[in-house]
Length: 308
Image 1 (cartoon, one colour):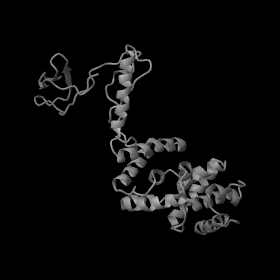
Image 2 (image 1 turned 30 degrees about the vertical axis):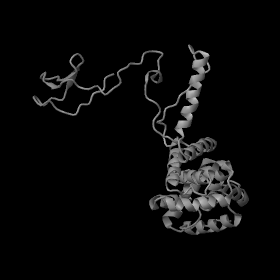
Image 3 (image 1 turned 45 degrees about the vertical axis):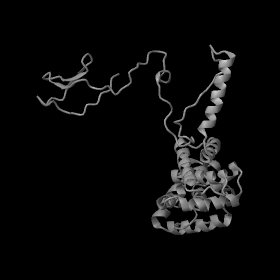
Image 4 (image 1 turned 180 degrees about the vertical axis):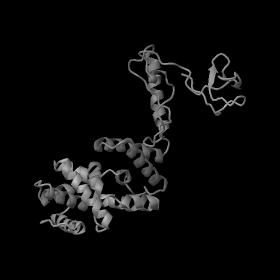
C-alpha cells in the first residue's frame, strides 16, 4: 500500500480537499477540478508486498532497532555461519568460520567495549531472572554507560556498578525491587555495593536522584499482599490508608517499606484477616517494633480507634 506525504490541505484552484493519486504519472490530482497539485510524488512506503504465507521478516532488509543493552548499540555487523550451509566446500566453510572469529574480535576493539559487552551479558541474565521489562533494561544500560563514561568504574567491579544501575532503574520505573535482592542475584558483597552506590550518587543528575530517593510506599503494597496470600480487599484498604496518610502529611520521612507493612497490618485488622506482625515483618524485611510504631502513627493520622 502506497504511503505519500500530503503537505497541503486544500486545492489552490478550487479550495477542495479531496485528492486522488495517479499511479502512472505519480501525480496527486484534485478530485473536484482536476488540477494537478503535485507531480512525481515520492512514495515513502515500502516497495515490496507481502503475500499469503509470507511474513514481514522475510522481506524486510532492516535489522533490529538501536538498543543501549548491546555494547555497540546493535548497529554492528554480525557474520553467522551455519553447519548446514549448502554449496560450501570444506575450505570455504573454514574460511567463513575464520571470518566469523575475526569479526567478533573487531567488534570489541578497546577496554570500554569489553567492559560494556561483559556488563550487558550479565544485565540480560539478571533481567531475565527478575522478569524486568525492556524499558527498565534500557534505563539500567543508560545509567551504566554514564558510569563508564565518567571514569567511575576505576577500582569498582562490573557487578557492583551494574547492581546499583539496575536498582536505580527499578526505582525510577516504580518497580519495588530492593538493592539487597539484586546484590544477592549478582553475588556481590554489601561493602562493594555500598561503595558503588556512593559513586553513582555523584554521577547522576540532581533531578534523577530526587526521583530515586522519593519512593512512593504504595508500590510495595501489591507485592507484599501477594506474598502474604491476602485478598484484593486488603490491598484496597491498605492503599486507601496510605493515601489518607499522605494527604495529612503525618508520615513524611518514614521508610516506604515500613509504611506499606503497617498499612497492610491495619487493613488486616479492619477486614478480619488474621496475619501477625511477625509474618508481615518477615515479608517486608522490617522489625515487628517498626510495624507497631508506624501503625500507631497511621492510626493517629486517620483518627480511628484500633487495638493493636
